[in-house]
Length: 222
View 1 (cartoon, one colour):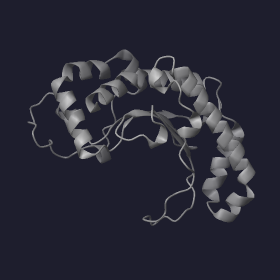
View 2 (cartoon, helix red, strand yellow):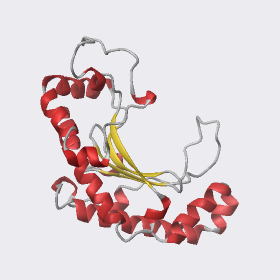
View 3 (tube, helix red, strand yellow):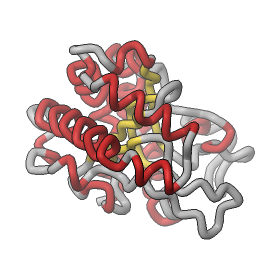
View 4 (tube, one colour):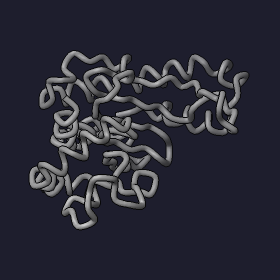
C-alpha cells in the first residue's frame, strides 16, 4: 500500500508546480519518494518469483526523475505531478526491451507495460514475430488471465497506424496488431485502491498477466 501522505503530496504539487513551493516541501517529497520506492521494491520482490529476469533489480534504478525536461515543451512546469517506475532487467534506462510499468498519479494511476514507440528496426522485428507466430500471440492475448486484467492491448489512435504497414496485406489475420506502433497494455487503478493493503498483490497479479506478452516481444528482439 501507499501512504495517504504520498497521494496528498502529488495532489499539492499539481496545484503548486513551482520551485519555491517544491524547495519548501522537499522533505515531504523525500518521504513520498521513499514510500513509492518501498512499494516498487515490494512489487519487484513479489513478481521476481515468477519473472527471474528482474530478480536482482533495485527499485531506485527503476524510478524516473520528478524533474521535467522543459527544453522543447511549451509547458514550463518544472516537475512531473506523478511518480513512475519502469521495471525490467535494465531498469528505467533499458533500451530495446519490453518491461513493466507503474504510474502513480492521483486520478490517473495505472499498471501495465509492454514496449512504447520502439525504433523502426525493433518495431519491424516485433511485427514479423506476430506475423509468423500469430496463433501463439493470439493465444496469449486470449488467455483468461490477460483478458480479465487488460482486455486487450491498447489501440488508441496514438498507437495505431491508419494504414497497414508496408510489406503486409489488409487481409492478414493479424492486421489489427501489425498496425500498432506501440505494444502496451494498461489497467487503471482507482485512487481509493492506492491505500489498499492489497495494492502490491494486485500489481503483481497484473504483471503476471502481462508477462507472456513481455516474453513474446523480447524474444522477437533477441
